[in-house]
Length: 404
Image (tube, rainbow, N blue to C red; front, side, top):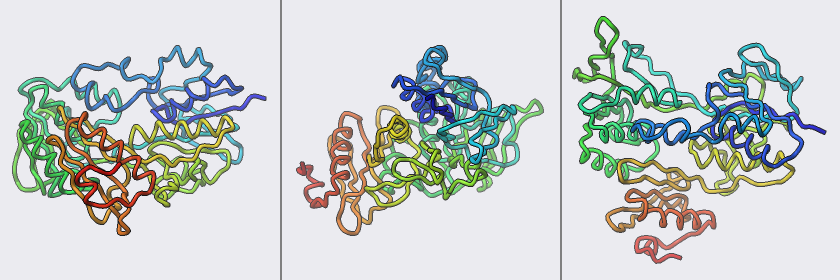
């Protein structure tokens, strides 16, 4: 008997579910609904290789459109899911097409938070979420041009690094008093700021954009800050964060609290519906709480869990969250949930450093590394294992790197 599988979301998580299930050779009729015109692709290169001009869409694709067709996957591209009727097991698209399902996967990802200031509609003011966004921004990147980055988070800093590597003048405007304020300890924030400053990036902390000013043709000319400063600029990239795309699930009556609530197997409050990737707030048995993770590794792992369940296997979502960000020739790597730590131990190694985050009971709950990949990569992998084993290491052993 054929199982009708509908996947809403053509990004990393949704695309990989379609790929894994179709490759299994089981009797599935798979429909993949994607809001973009492109087949599923990886997003990490967007703020790196695509902006640098070294990567094209073909380099980012998870699989090509003709491979989708060859595998029997019906890609419904450039449309969104407008209505989810869980009672009748049907999805209505933005074009009015009704698609029935037996099993449904919601992989709607996240959306860029709205940034509404005067002049934000002008040519040269952009946000970065899709491949088309990255190509549009990249066309503005050339030596000597002036870029303002709004927001000192990971995406904003990767954009800043790419722009400097292309010879642009870069200013980062951050409302907080430091970079990465919502997601990283001050020790990392300060080190990253110094690294960017050495590369020629300037900063305005504790400041916000009040308006963008363009000429009569709509071409961006300057940004006015809350401090009264006027900054000449040719292009601006807004990186003020994203939110889980949960509106479809919420309107359908699924449980939503910050993300679509699931169990460790990524099942939602409806037995035939799964949620995975950025939009899912999933129960993590290792940390004994629901968490939502915006990362490539999370989307990949979720796709494997959902696919296994659809294929009759049971795989619990207990892998340790992992995130990385490459900026210039250094990398930030984060494993676990460092923000749950109540104390930290620093290990210096080869010009890099690792912060080990311990909870109130002394259990290792997360680790943060900054430096050359070849130096911090091994230490972060070791920390991943220690976190998964619920170890309570001696701080001195972490500091000296003698824990095995």
